[in-house]
Length: 160
Length: 302
Image 1 (spheres, rainbow over the protein chains, first blue to last red):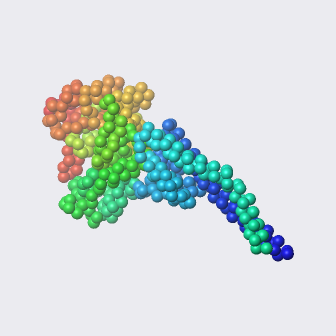
Image 2 (image 1 turned 180 degrees about the vertical axis):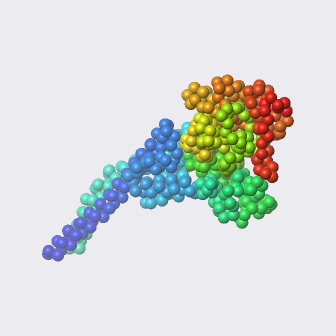
Image 3 (image 1 turned 30 degrees about the vertical axis):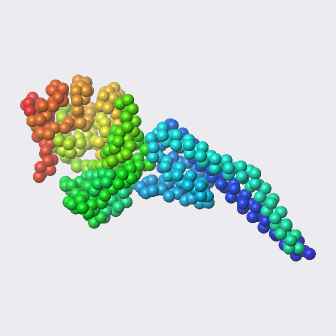
């Protein structure tokens, strides 16, 4: 009996952990897009006032998302080396990946006014992915832990 | 000393690899990338085509670049920040680190006469400046107490800018003069982000990126120079500005294009200067390097 209770608790915990992992992934995705928007916002401000070069803006931006930090660092390195930037896609999915890579690859290739328009458009486009990710995290991310725990308990009942 | 690695971002990888392996940076003066054409270099005073294995006088084995390579080169020169270099690109050049200059050719877009942008880049020429210490001794062997107004004359590529740059350094360091360089196209001091790419002396101020009138007015009102050095006088307006500065007691050393001693007298600039210059220094390249024939204005009539 004690053994079975222990197994039930363990399964519940494993389920909760799995749910937590799903929740963290959703949170990470939502935070990434929020962070990317923050970078584009600061880039837009630079275009409006100080006109810093792209590597300078990328270097100065303090990214909270590890993926975005890696992408900005790679872009900056490639620009200085004169090679084509190939920032890491990480866990970005197909359409998200092509949208983000397209935006990062095209930054800095236009005159000031055209660049501002492009950044605004990029914010709108990537903002949709961000909103979707944030909604998903708010709607199901937090419930994932509870669902995972319940799934673990259900598995324990079935095993009983 | 010029380091080829400083221009890695502006050269296509194959061109950079070949240049790094086969060329001596000290003898390299210019690299030209033309869309759809072989890469040419000005090396040791002669023009060659660049191949994978070195230099060739024949274009058949030369490395070729396409329009995308030329565009990538301009992007590299602008640090992938075209918006930050729009004015430079519109003026037709970008100054890189170490005084290297990229001349840009392409399709100029205008609106009501104003240059809006340059697109469809067709070619770039990457010019590598070389400092030649004391080259200006050919026009001024020793720094004199009373610096006079001098016009340095030579054909394009005749060494005028190199002489002016060295003279600025000597007047500043040896002559203890406050020198101001009115560097319209950033060719003399090769400033990038406010820092001269070449040694122009410790008492030298540089105004760059603006017309001569603005530079001279700023200088006369607030910088108090003893000598103003400027490049490439062209028309009557330039002559007027020089006269104003000379009238204020500031010595002006300038340069202008002239095919030879005789042809300059026929230029409108000669008449417009109206005798304000004290000396004309005609440069010529010979087997002994750069030499100058300095003629007092009173003795020069073409």
